[in-house]
Structures are given as C-alpha cells and as structure tokens.
Image 1 (tube, rainbow, N blue to C red):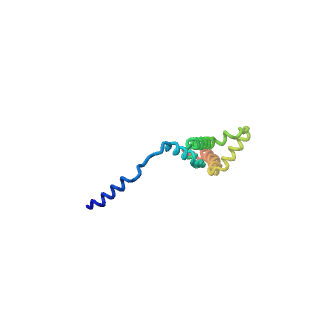
Image 2 (image 1 turned 120 degrees about the horizontal axis):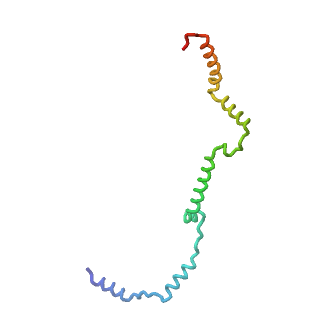
Length: 123
C-alpha cells in the first residue's frame, strides 16, 4: 500500500467543510410539504377507500329484486269472480295434453256399464 496516497486523502478529508444543519431546517421542510399540491382522488379511488357503502347498497338491491321475483303471479293479480275462475280452469283442462284421454274416458265407462248388463259372463 502506498502511504503517500492515504496521507493525501486524509489531508483532503481534514480540509473538507463539516456538514451542519440549519436551525430552521424542520420549519423549511414543513413549509415545502404544505406547499406541495395534493391531488384530489377520483371516483375509483373514493370507491376503493369507501367500498362498504356501495357494496351494501348493491347487496340490498339484489335481495329486494330476488324477493319481488319470488312472489307468485296470482298474488299480484286481483281475485277473479267465480264464473271467471271456472272459465280459467276449463281453459287449462282443454289445453292439457290429457284432455283427449279424459274425453274418451266417459265413453269407455259408458261402454263398460252397458256390457256389464248385456254380458252375463263378465266379472
């Protein structure tokens, strides 16, 4: 190792000015911090920080919609008079695919009753 280089380095370091902090350093830092312009958060940032309120509102809307969709249709309609109820039931029976079987069932029962009296060997 070359001691002459180290001696020169130590001599230069000895001549360097000592760092000193101004007594008004903290005041200056705080003034600069206050002077910085702060940006206002946008809608997405507001939602991110206040997510509970919109989430609760959305949940209540979903619950209300599910409850109203589960109500039966006839509860929302006015009650029909007796004659209209019979007509509605008759329309439902006539639209049923079993209607043809029901209409022929009466004929089959009539045939069965008549053959019972005509045939002595039946049953």
